[in-house]
Length: 100
Image (cartoon, rainbow, N blue to C red; front, side, top):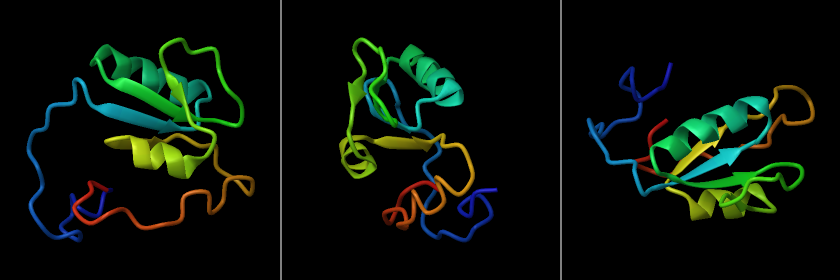
């Protein structure tokens, strides 16, 4: 469960936010990441992604590294396979005020 949902992050939790027109980043564009991106695109979000290799995704923006992806988007979805190859791939704390 998200730490914010159980009261550990502090601050106000935004009850609503417009997502259409926002930029969504998908970290890991495998089968599940692709499904998530397709659904976010239906909300008219601009899709950015980072994956081991460029994908055939017309209109979506590829980032060669996860840091540039995170800097370019409003929402970041981590959809990486678990295991030793991705352990520590995302290791910095979220920015203050971010949603968990």
